[in-house]
Amino acid sequence: VPAVHTLRELGKALVPAAYQRSARDRILHYFQRYRRAVIAGDELGVVSGISEYARRIRELRVQFGWPILSGETARQMVESEDAESDPEPWGPDLPRDLLLGMRPDEYILIGDQDRDAAHRWNTANAIRREQLPVRDRLLAFLRENVGQPVTGEELRYVAKGASEWGRRTRELR
Image 1: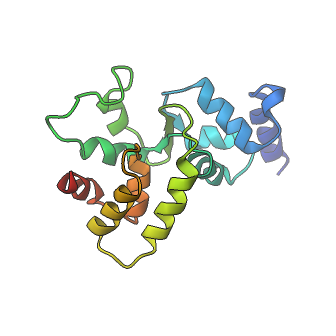
Image 2 (image 1 turned 45 degrees about the horizontal axis):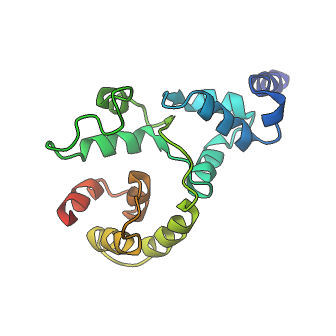
């Protein structure tokens, strides 16, 4: 037990004192410092100093609008891209092979904060609970967000994790 506490304190020390107020602040600072770099969940666990680091990542993504992708979502997003679409949709410094090679417990921050994300999440949560086929839930979510960019993570959430959410999105497009 003392070794675990010592390791947590060591992880907290990796972040400047101004960001040590909470685990969420430490994780966000670390993501911003290593933007567009794949970070292992264990590494984030050490930096956060808590065992519930995944919950803090979800809070950053859902409640605060930070575009943090898990390895699973990144892989699904890349696999669902059309062949004729942009070959490197996230830029040359973030190639498809990197995203495809991510493990499910790895994360990456791909952009800046989206302040409308909390509203979209509430909408997504309401639609997700409806007893509709995946395609209809995705369509309802897209209709609620006409003219606004939505993330693959949001579409995946609305689809309740169904593996064919990318295919259904392409069908709607």
